[in-house]
Image 1: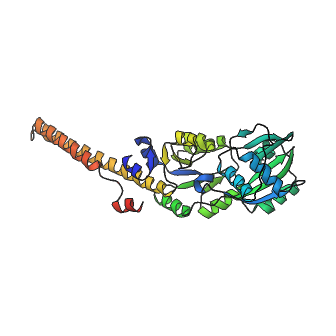
Image 2: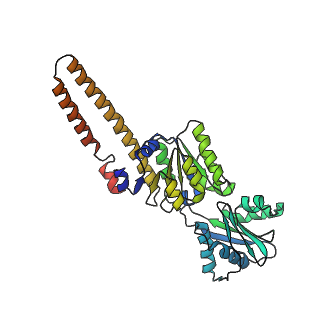
Image 3: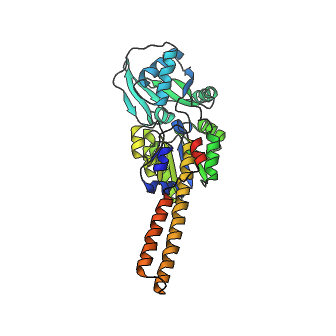
Length: 341
């Protein structure tokens, strides 16, 4: 745990390092974990009766109250285009992992995910609309805006993956993680784009927070040991369900509170460092156990055979304990790696 702290990794207990070493599956949330948590608005597409500026202005007006990375991207886009707005909406209701609801000029106004807009709120979506959205989205994540029971427009959000992530995932495979899984509330196409780019084995798209936890439980019930890596409020149920959980540097307060391990740097490579550290720790524990068992068994046999006295046996026993303890205080990772990190 001390050595982990020198790599800007906070581990809340030794048992979490053991669980991290024994895990065979790692599950990632996409947004803010595999991606850089600084998305940008690629397109703003209006629908019938609305202009592009109106869609962006209304979206920014609603999103400015919330510290989510996508919300900040929408507000930033409006500021770049000098679309200043007055507070026209009533009280805003934020639904975790779904979207935002309010009232503007007496009309119920919604912004959020496909699930929230079209399934929960039953906003009509024609086949023509579906084709139009698919044509314009370019496999980006999409935030939908609905006003007065009708689709007003949608915003295409590009969220680039973290640099070097593909290589990091390959290193994790080489360290014994047999399967890499990605969870996201984005569309299937947006998720498939990231999964193909990073070589991820399995992904689950358009899922809710409770679905993430259920997927973690499913893998555990199949006999796997699961690492969950996430950063948002909506990741908290899955973080709590995993055998060991990791939160990112810019995670929400709830995610950091729930997680067993917290990365204080934005670099996903610390996950590799943590795996190397935990595997080395388990190797040292097992080696020490074997040495102690063999040495003490030898002392007992020599004592029973009358070859050494009880005081001599006790002396060597205590000496071996001190020697093992001193040896265990040495760093687990090579000095060269520490300097690189």
